[in-house]
Picture 1 (cartoon, chains in turn blue, yellow):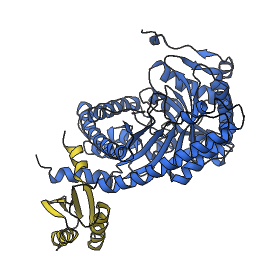
Picture 2 (cartoon, chains in turn yellow, cyan; picture 1 turned 45 degrees about the vertical axis):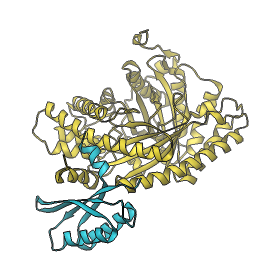
Picture 3 (spheres, chains in turn purple, brown; picture 1 turned 60 degrees about the vertical axis):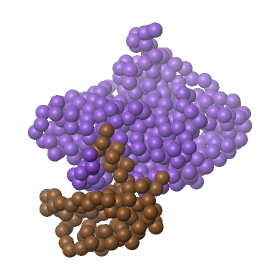
Picture 4 (tube, chains in turn brown, blue; picture 1 turned 90 degrees about the vertical axis):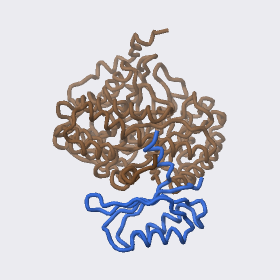
Length: 452
Length: 92
């Protein structure tokens, strides 16, 4: 059946008026073969490999975008978790030497972010893991394009409270290591971190991956908002159907772009991450989708249910469209990067507690929210523990990207600039969980892990 | 992969010469128009042209630039997209 004018127009409309684009093409790169006791040799080899692959990625992504007529916004690299690379380097400076080299490679190649400066410490930390953790404030504070992560909990292993308590302290150091706490925006704490996630700050190239794999993150909040707004009165069963159809279409385009780019680069095609990833562009907002569904503001009663419907429809539509759906594949609800979310916090409709409840049905967690600069480290640790417990118990990924902003208090606002957006500083519950956090130890894995 | 066939989408206020100028430009670039559809949607002129560009004397990016320039002269929005993208989205 020939393609009709309305069908062509629908696709054009998504790109022209609804901000549809390929949000990120992220090339995961294995660096395990470069480990060396001399951190300078490791750093130099990593820099060379990433500069070369990054330049090719940037050039080919541009060419694919021009050839297919689909915008590709961000070109990124993710690497083998850096803590594994510095295992043989006893030098305390090793992680910093590597961090500088990674940042420089990204800059040289015209890549906006390189992810993977992180470690897996859900059950315990090796000496190298600890060296990397301790380097985070300086490494992320002194670089522009480097992103870090820690995996602090899994459903199979439980949650490492000792590491989380220390992370609370490190986050405060990180927040004062660069203006406006911006280094914290480049770091995410995970439960059940996915190994093929194309989105920053949490992207890394996991141990089950090939030498290189291209992962694609699509972005369609504007498209989904448009279609929900065009159906203001249908019931929720029908609305789910409409969202599924729409996400199917945008995922198919994402897969096509990913496969084409992977083939040009001569690497494996990894996954399409079907997450709805908002930007601060007007209309490109998950908050606005929830409002179009019938909520006065995000945070109103009904928000968690509306989000559950949205995510379910996104996953079903996306899974039908591509056999390679992976990564986070949920809905991002970053406060600072979504105008609907910003507005909801500013008008008092949305607080931290409701945001946490929303993440119970949303894979991505508490994302890009600012808290007062004087928030105690144990409170930061406890917020992270709460959020990761949701992921650990419910067999899902959750993450926390929290920015304590020095000198600011609840009600203030901080502008991070660019894609990171503007965050209203949110109030933190003043009652303390310090004694709980100071106990340390591990939260045991939920019983559902013992299924063999 | 230079796309074999592309859809050219033209949107904007109806006026004389849209089809003539667009198709002339495509001819000059060596494209072969295989299908044209056009209608007024909500008061806006919408046209899609399906063109085989395998014998074009420029790449898709060059063709897009020329068509966008023409669109700018006429106050129209012009988009060029590979047929493969539309097919992936609209056909299972």
